[in-house]
Length: 91
Image (cartoon, rainbow, N blue to C red):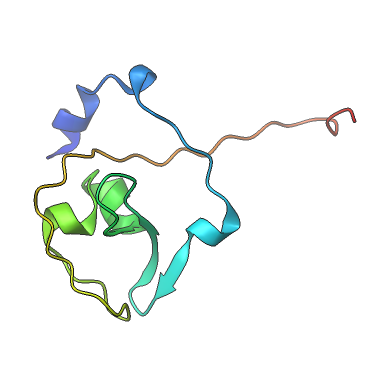
């Protein structure tokens, strides 16, 4: 799946989730999340570059203690960062 394919996805109708600090895992190759569909590692690099988890791409992650062998995952992934600038929120 290339950049052109990712541009055709209707991201407005995508399911969104807010990640808590414990959702990020660290391995020798960097940081990853658990894929919300298949549970395999989804490295930050693969989410940004490929839009897929490592299970879909059949790639191992160094430093985790389980095999990645789930090529049937259909999840297309994207990371967003949101911010505001200005005053503190009212309490």
